[in-house]
Image (cartoon, rainbow, N blue to C red):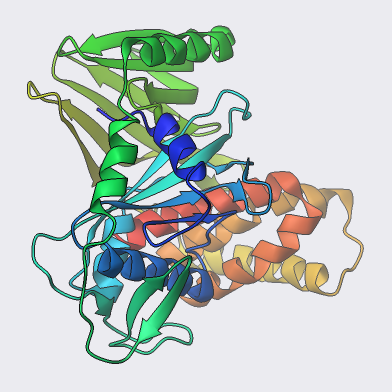
Length: 379
């Protein structure tokens, strides 16, 4: 089993970006431009590496190779995104890798692009941003470029990638160090662990809250120590946790509502299946059912939201009560969109840069709501 933290270190030590890996400070698959650039790099790395894994490391400052980190990103639907936009898509996974010096809400993103079993050429299926459908991308050194002529794919990286992965294998020392790091960082949140199949060390920490016969958890961190992969992180939402000898299940809830009438709604169930052959699978199932509200009531809230949005655009002074209402602005737009008000999605996107620079708590809520939308869209 590969220790992903060690793999990232070995990739970064390998003379900068090249034809089998790329590094980014951040990616943004919420915008068309960001989505297009991400798909371009996946396509080019897949085509240039037909017989070996290739990687994108996210959260790295380019000049000094410093590990800056990015926010935890849930990858459960990223394969659906790749499948939607690429012909002959590779198998892609996004993992959140914990580094001890990073704060709890920061990780390094690791995109792994696995080789296809055939020699098919990966290409864009449809137009996106400034790239035309049918475009084929290849890697030339550290640059992904479009190719519009017949391509001969050569296997040039298998040996060196195999050596890097072999030097990144996990061992007992790395496992113990990772376990110690987790317990130390999570000491205020009741850290626990379980060993599955006598091999997989899974740690989790959270703040419990008992409601009736059910225990809910917030401030949840779940990490597979063997690979240094953070499997789940949520600072606000509440989850249920269940496990037996073969699997570990996480049922995530989201807090939605209007004004002061909020409820917890199940969003997604994630099940980690541990196998006897030293492998594990992660299965995610969207269980979300959008809350329904009276159309007249929603229109009233939308009109008030739009008034606040206009003031933000014009940089007008907000009253104290209006500032407090900004926290729920994105939630109202989300609920309206889920209830058939399609324009609310455009207004939600308009609010993103405005809240980013004016209200940190409201911006965090907006990011949580965009995450819900992303899960629904690519389900």
